[in-house]
Length: 115
Length: 116
Image (cartoon, rainbow over all chains, first blue to last red; front, side, top):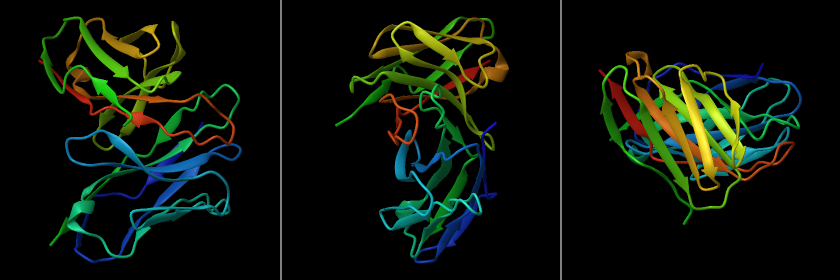
């Protein structure tokens, strides 16, 4: 079955540091890939997405590139802010005809950014 | 502004009680989902529904049931709550579509359930 593996957390950075959160996946076919973010006390919200190989998703300074050859979708940001402190989830969407758009999530990575 | 609301943010129940978690969306979405979120495990799908009165089991349906009598409302039921069901429960909705469609799921704020 499908699976998503994220790098172990938690991750603690100073403001303006470079961020990478690794995500690799196992799936049949060509899934769509997503990064969701969960701020404290809130539900998840979509951060960015990519639907085919070599697509780059970007939003709020975050980027991730769909790498089919390495089955990866690593999240990066050049300069993090305190307000980026949150839990980040990598996810893939089934592409099968009866999948109904189900998502498979990674375990989440807690990011804390200090001033 | 799109919205998914959940009936309670925090809930405390006793072992053996029947528990209802309610979710309402105002986006006319066909698909609705219930997940539980546990540290180190990410989100795991309990049940989902792709139409009124239609439901499918997710990855961890044991101990849960669901009801969808109206398009906008999806209820999660714990028939006899147990301590191992203490968790954060998240509801989500989306437009239909498999294949290469990338319709996102919209999430509610979550219900933190404690079973004592």
